[in-house]
Amino acid sequence: MTYALPPLNALRAFEAAARHLSFKLAAHELHVTPAAVGQQVKALEARLGVQLFERLHKQLILTAAGHAYLPGISEGFRHIADATSQLKPSGTVLLQLGVHGSYDLRRLDLAAFRSSHAEIGLRVLQPAGLHELIEGKVDLLVARGVGHHPGYRCDRVHEGSGLGDWLIAPEGTADCPEIVSFRVWLRALPAEKPLANRRPRLVGGVGS
Image (cartoon, rainbow, N blue to C red; front, side, top):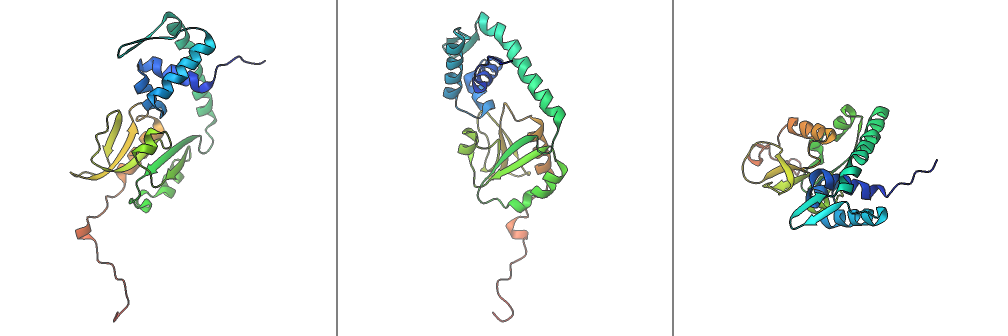
């Protein structure tokens, strides 16, 4: 049997936009731009030959067709997610982590994380910044700065004030199990010692 299905990315864009009633929030969840979500939804409407949203000034409303379509699409994604989770092979869920260039990856103890979270396939991109997160190249980001990016959940890695390391994830996916697992792992790691408390590094030998 051949299933007559619209493109999966277009369905994902519609489903996320319908839940949030916002192209912007859907874009944060899907790691794309609001314009990309709008284009995917428009292409889906053209493919189906029906209008799914009423686009008002600063407001998105589902049409009667959109209301009728949404439950089946959401249920389909839930079935796919449930079927995938039941397989549970190693690395079923791929988590792509971005890290700023000056961060010492040894502090993350990635080998231990992978060993204790066999269900998560962890990939690391370094250097990476907010641009890579916005463009969807990474799912979450360890960034250096002061946090506070609208549309993103920003958790300081260790207590302090001023500049610091922050774990940043889109609000739409910040509570996904794999991101929560990494957030808990990261917060439990020892804090980096302040420069003043570090022992001096010996460069040369005796008499140098």
